[in-house]
Image (tube, rainbow, N blue to C red; front, side, top):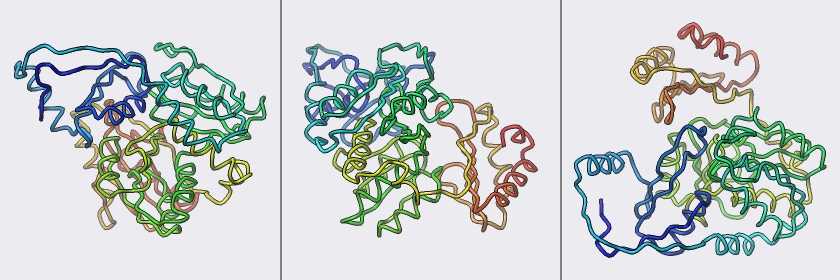
Length: 385
């Protein structure tokens, strides 16, 4: 791992969304950077997102940083600190790329996070009619939690879309790299359905690899294959998804959580994803619900969280693995058991002491069957399923 030499220039770009941080790194060809962010986590959390070179930072690198800090094993010297406003250049880039989204009516729910200023500015600049919702900065998140993938927190967005008769509802997470959508009826749309819509757009003229996370509904793989692409399953988590995405030169990558990666960027960006969807709507002349009518997954649960201390998680997962004897088991991330009639996944949460569960089945009867199998092996899941 390289270190900054004495005399290095450090630039403070202020309070910006994480995708703007990525944009600045590429625009200025930086050696690396640090973003102070809790991402989608509640206000009591915070941390650092590191960028070193062009590849995602791995656990090995993080452990090495920790060792060097603990042991004082780093160089000391002097350098320069400058302040710079990268937001105008970021906005100009977005506006130049998406002028075709003119005319859409959108409600933007920033959840008091970092997209509250830049997202409405860009959408307004390309001619969209914008209603702002929770767009003032407030790190205590007084109006909803900072994770829009918790769909129950989006009631205000849904109501605003219906009241206004808007074409699209857009909800960002705390640092702006995740995004969730509501259609013109105010119904929140599963991230996999939005991702499948993007896949159809991006692969319509040129089939390519597409990366999706292990938690994703089978609808994603189905649409990739329909479009002649190559579906690549990834371990859940930003680093793992981006690594596979870059290694294979994929056109797109997507996660259940609302992360969407684009080949032309080389990373994920919530605002870019929102503009892609708005552009698809504009060019199609259809409503979002019409575009999604045949992108319907089989019965699938949301991401279910079970509190489980770190020291018990391996034991818990192995107990679940016993259910898979005689069936196909994937261990790319936790335990995913493939039945002839569906699948279930149990994996460790990356950020909190919990086990994450998800089930998909070919029909409701099969869903009940898989749930019963899971509850028999792990009775503590009964109240959650």
